[in-house]
Image (cartoon, rainbow, N blue to C red; front, side, top):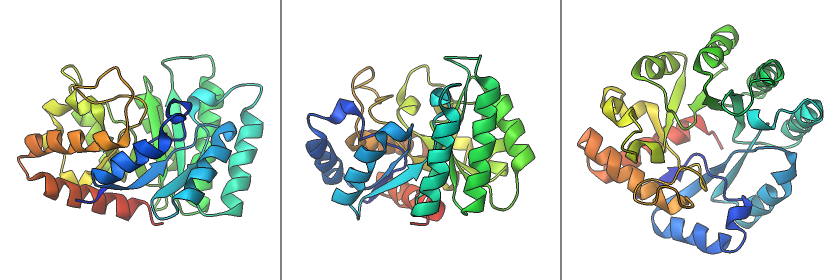
Length: 256
């Protein structure tokens, strides 16, 4: 079974001691493609090193995470994103979006950075990978305003409700489903079956949001199989079929 981890931070310092083993473990469990979202420019050298080591398996996004949109650096960071997108191909612009969980004071510059990066994605005909936390209404408003044929992508780590899920899908987005679907209080498992599997991609968000029974511990891409097994239960479908459909969805989004 070939699986795609559409969102993993395996360049994170949490993997510095055993990154090679983590990647091999994932491959041994069928994960053959890894898509790495960008956070800020400081991580780029490690991301590029990984891409060069695993050119057939690892693909990079370019973007500025909303939690890293800071008043003293966001203009420089956005310039970095813009320059990199002009220099070489990327799988997506991400992860970008809005996060009002940690800091509401940066909302206006978060919005500016989000819109700017959406426009860059449309310019380069790339999907966007969106992070949203405590800001679904604001994100939806921006997407509606920016929507055209060139705006599409993934709602990373979707934790909204059924109504929000359907609206994002109608706007041309896939839902990124990961460890939260295994949580007792995750809630999305209660309505996920009402979402066609053709609108879903798999992700881990490693090292964050490890699925049960590893919740609270370091996540890794090999745990994608746990997500597949959970979706197999929800959709009453063989795990192999879950893998085939979700991997095809990822292929459609990421053209690399």
